[in-house]
Length: 475
Image (tube, rainbow, N blue to C red; front, top):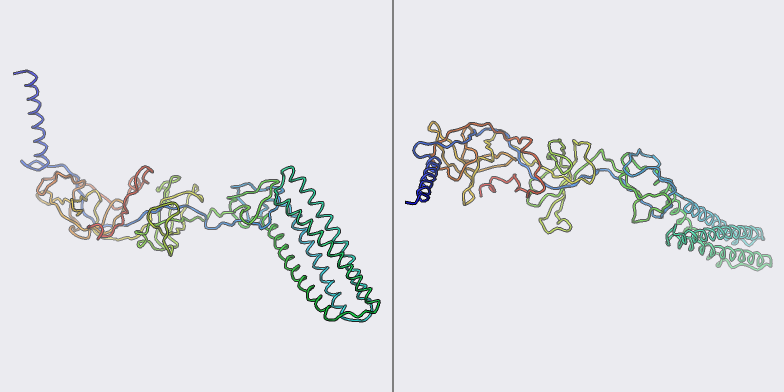
């Protein structure tokens, strides 16, 4: 017979013997044993949890806004710098706002005198009141002429700045409108002077003034005065708002800033800056709708993220659970409910804007039968079972079980096992009832170790929630 054939037959026989020995050993036949780690069912504590993604944010944040843009003369505090309440953040050019207040204040004074004049005109005696009104009108013309010249000067200056690309078109347009408004005010003042002079002339000629006409003029002037007073109040408010915006509104960090020297800042849609209290942080988390029934205010939360590890000990408490569910923008996944978590123990690396995973501890039981997750197997129907080592024979027996709440490493047993039973860890598909066990007894704990609790890498898929109910686990 060919030598190569003989060698092949010999190898086949040897391999067959090894396979037979392995099968015999695995099945427990011929008195052989399987080596296995065994642990005892203990009465222990088990805590269930769910995970949710979230974003760290500051609890207190104040943003500064101005309705009217102002020119920034000098930035005193840079972004990300600490500030105390009342610290000067920047210096603004408030000339335009102050000029508007002064103009409206002068208009109010003029209109008050005009109204006084009209009321005096109701008295037909003499010409003294008419002469006083004319004097007021003459002063108004001078004041309006000065304001018009100032507005024209500002417009021409802004026109040059706009040509040099130093201000915006809207700023140029505002100064042009202010100039045109001052021209109208000047013309109105001259008209009032002419009217006052004509009234004085008519009085001197002894012409009687119609009482009804004067009453109408008084009503018109009262309306004009009310409108001016409102405009003045608005202008004063804008000026005070701009003055206040130059100072820090609270202690914290200047977390945002659009302020630059020589540039206009403000406007209804643009914040000047934001001051954040980074010493008081919270997490805004999104909990999936099928987990939300397990979540309640007051529950403990642990955190980890790309910037920090769970072992660093960042913890918090749920402060509120949202009243409605929603689908996050740009996603097609499950609906979520927003949950706010106050961070009660922090570390220096935490800051607003960091993403984090939240481990929310939803239920805790103490003194219940607990086994490690690695002891559990599942048949083709999804039923859970373990192998129990029976003594004194030290043989294994398959036992179907019912489960309660899960922790990250252990699970409560609600049926099928009792405290003191010995279960085999890492059951294999070849295990069968009656197989003898060479046991290595090991201690296990329901509390995860540092390595067990380490955050999964970003490449790992998200595991199923370990807080399944007993009914869900038994399915």
